[in-house]
Image: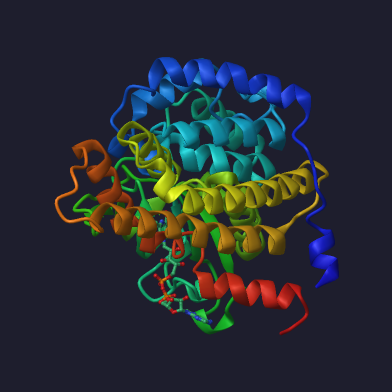
Length: 386
Ligand SMILES: Cc1cc2nc3c(=O)[nH]c(=O)nc-3n(C[C@H](O)[C@H](O)[C@H](O)COP(=O)(O)OP(=O)(O)OC[C@H]3O[C@@H](n4cnc5c(N)ncnc54)[C@H](O)[C@@H]3O)c2cc1C
């Protein structure tokens, strides 16, 4: 236990990265500040290609990628600052989010020179967007049991058959990076898995949006029916998909987005309380949220410091995500209870819509990116308890 706690050594964001924060704030003031709260609450669930391209023109998409590929070559602290400001403002960053956070870094780490030249500059310009093709109807938590299969044909091409589900932005993005079986059987588990970059416009691909509790369709089901993939669709080595996907999940879980899903709602509620003179009634609850956020944010910065040092803080990231999503879920629960406690209380529509949206989405916070139970299993293993 003490070893794990020691891993959260207090770290500070360097002055250079803090200075960058002012540029980001200036940009967001111009492009995001006036948007309604319920629009801003969607943030990394909101697919807005125009916004992503505006950000790309500032050089802020694919930020950790090298300049040779059009990236900004920023480190994890700079990215932390950028991401934190985008999420706190509620910027609609969903279109480029996955490519910036994990597909681009994955291609940089495992891709061939041709793949890097082909995809990375277009990611940085906001021209192409990616989705994650991991989950399947019977392989969510148990990811190693994926059944989608790619078979090598005599022509050197791959033929893909199967089905992915819950792909965020799947019906709007251009490519998914799919984890599929290339040899053996599902019972072989981690062995025989590989990753492919699949162009969603290829013949044989069908993408069906899935409607969620909010009535919107932000994710999709994707069917592959004898899809012919070019030789260079394979990313990394055949059979190394499990190792690669775990590196990808570490990118996915380590960022500050696991703390900020309800922050626009919290901000909007606080400003409404101040406007209506109700702030003092809720000061204890708000103080508690502030203390929790302060602590979680510093844990997240400690994880970022480990990334900057070239370490792989998988267990620490799981811990921050687990506690972070509890924090994110407690905000809409309390705001909703406060808004409905007094019959006849006049609440403005903008705040009500924001509260309704976040309350409907909150159950997903502890599912996406690995469920609470799975993360707790990882933490227990990290503590030597399993
Ligand atoms: C909003 C949202 C966006 C998503 N986006 C994507 C995406 O872009 N790409 C993608 O590939 N996937 C995506 N997912 C899917 C997500 O990763 C899975 O929902 C998640 O991994 C759980 O898998 P499952 O839904 O199959 O549930 P299951 O694995 O069937 O789990 C059901 C329940 O059983 C519990 N459980 C399962 N196994 C164990 C165990 N061993 N020990 C203890 N408890 C266990 C789980 O914690 C859960 O509570 C998204 C999901 C959501 C909600």
